[in-house]
Image 1 (cartoon, one colour):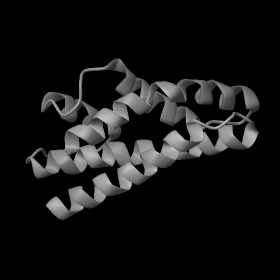
Image 2: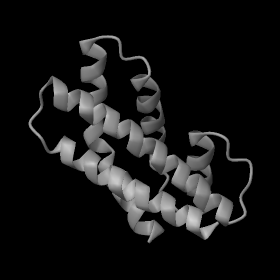
Image 3: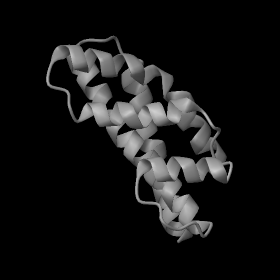
Length: 125
């Protein structure tokens, strides 16, 4: 199982680096859309990495991102920061981007998430 967690952390680090790179670029439509896509990848890897960590610690019944976030908080892997649950909602919004206004709204939220993910990666070792 540790290999599964190690692989998961490695993939998360790579995705997070790419997410940070795109957020540092000057905004245009392509950068915005790429940032949203990279956020989606990073988010998915973050919650699945938390799930793998929890399973390694013997925690069962993790079926959703919210389960993983709550469990990670309970074992003190992450802080009880409402931005984690906000991140879940933002990810859900990405599935419903049908116009420029929604894309702009989601893009505007993205800069508040890197510190959370960076701390998660650091705390996972």
